[in-house]
Amino acid sequence: MSLILHSPLDMHLHLRDEKMLENIAQASAHTFSGGLIMPNLVPPVSSKEEIVAYKNRILKAIGKETFTPYMTLFFKSTYDKTFLESVRDEITAIKLYPAGITTNSEGGVSGFDIEELRPTLEAMSELGIPLCVHGETNGFVMDREAEFVAIYEKLASAFPKLKIIMEHITTKKSVEALDKFENLYATITVHHLMITLDDVAGGMLKPHLFCKPIAKRPEDREALLRVALNAHPKVMFGSDSAPHPQHAKESCGCAAGVFTAPIALQVLAELFEKNGASQEKLQAFVCGNAQKIYNITPLPKKVVLEKKPFKVPQLYSGVVPMYAGEEITYSIKEVYNGR
Ligand code: DOR
Ligand code: ZN
Image (tube, rainbow, N blue to C red; front, top):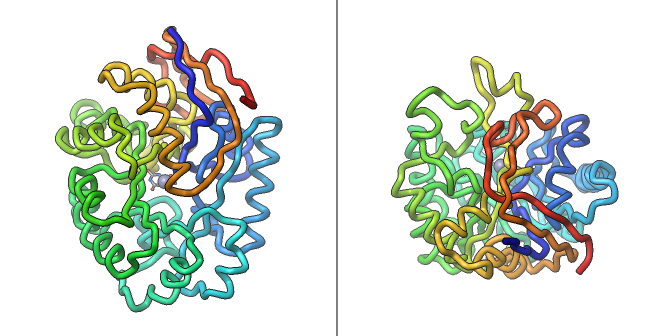
């Protein structure tokens, strides 16, 4: 049995830089037609020169693959309209991190004073630049995202024309917010569709499943599944595939991030099939919805998956993927660049 996906997109992707970029970019570029590239490098991507240079490094790393890096800029409240006009054509979105909330986010926003953010957000709204947000407060770890929903709602009503994407949502409360505000959208990862906190810390601790935001409760996962499997038009796939070297994960002080790029589509295919969700819904979740939300035209690519066991390698260039060493039921059979 085979399944064809057209131009799958990964609308939240960490490709890193230097050796790591060179080592892992292929894993996404082989099976995806494009990805929204996160800007949390050291230092964060925050000027036109940095965006252009990073995009070129990515293009070099992916070689001959058909893959569009949709670039993002690291949000700063110092960006004015003139600056944003000058970078408009180079970026697809701007990513906002609360200061210190996750990997390399130290230069992010503290306090969330709407008046301080207003000039930049108004200019983004006028220029039609979407705002992607890592929505977590610095409260108790299980409550961080739910607490942040109040901030999403404040932003959504203060800037009704600004498209706001709640990145990697993990809670029922965020799912509910989607239908309350026209300008709120969301990405959902494959790992948050598959696991709860129990899988991370309920038995032996699983560092390779540790990420920010942390996986939540069964009812949260069910809420995510409901909108993903139905391809709710305001949600799209964003893997948040976030590679860290094996030693940084298997250490005292484990880095946050799950590396899913090489297995994401296979696992989604199995998940949709198991839950009786149609191929059309999967196609919308991994491409059509993002195309409409971001108003992008992905490069043509045809990914053929087949129902044949795939033993997930233990390592990809020193990075442990999700399901390392385990067997998953779908494999990538062929990829055609073009129609
Ligand atoms: O788990 C995570 N890892 N969450 C993030 O938001 C960032 C990411 C990373 O860059 O490693
Ligand atoms: Zn991320």
